[in-house]
Image (cartoon, rainbow, N blue to C red; front, side):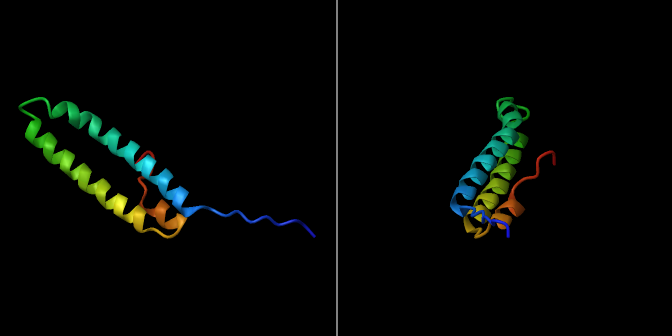
Length: 82
């Protein structure tokens, strides 16, 4: 007979990690828009794009907070390289 160990995942800690990754992804998307927002000819379009990014990550934040399993958290996270 072998020894079986059960791995328990702390969902609250997983949410914290997911929020950190969400914030990092949001910052990466904002970086080029922050520069464009300072150029008068591109400021309006940049602000519209920034609002789209805000909306996207606000929805993701809500979904992470509502998740009750790690799989649910993973399902809403941005895919790396995508």
